[in-house]
Length: 316
Image (cartoon, rainbow, N blue to C red; front, top):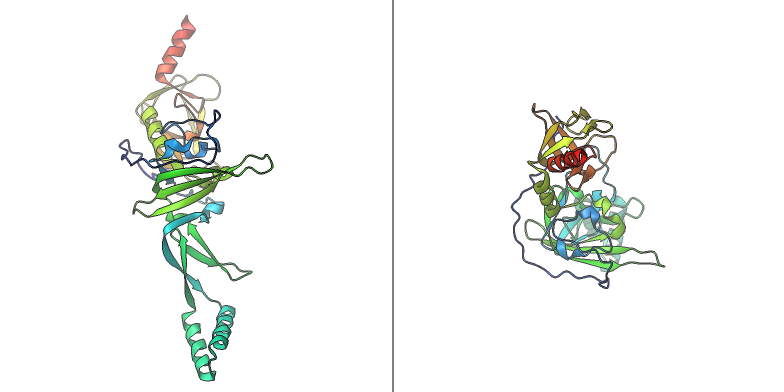
């Protein structure tokens, strides 16, 4: 079994205070108005009206087995309102360089200089203050400078409340582009600013909770009929094999869960999947990415009311 349940998508959503949503783009007729739960994070673009996102939550899914996260492995654009410290471990070159600087600036004698060098060798650590959210640090090999970042593990499988959103116009030489600034709050109440390039939304792997909740309301518990047209095999993420649908067979969607999908695509994050069962208890899972408005899934499963209406129309 390849289930990987990351979280249960709850129907009960807490009511949050409404915060101001600002935009640096002039409001015009081409701004895409949305309602809460209508779009997912990946659907946001430079012309999306962000007001419906206030009070929603961003979810960062568990990484997929063997997934390469790219720039999300070491997030560089999460800044907290809280100041913390990161260990800066000194290599021998830095120890001697700093020792020389201190000795010269303080005018230390031989014994004092030797004692200082020994102490610096033993400690070899300098604490560096930073406002990076949940920071970790590593050395750049070429410059020995400290690279401070937010590791994906610090946000993985966690929700962050959206306090406000802002979109900044980054158009250069008529090439449209933008940048999103999300004010977030974690479960402990710590607030942070997350800056995302407009063309980098897809790479974040993030989801919006209200979208997932609405999608589950429209699908879980409902029945779908397998169409007779074309190939009746669907990829089953539960076992990595094809599941053969019975033409006009009746299948119930029971849940939406996040799973690792071993389909050869090497997507770095776990993805949400519809879980279906047949009359014998057999189960299969289809990625919600193949969903079309919850009425036709993977182009092979049609919502039962729509199927009945379709057959009635054909008989006329």
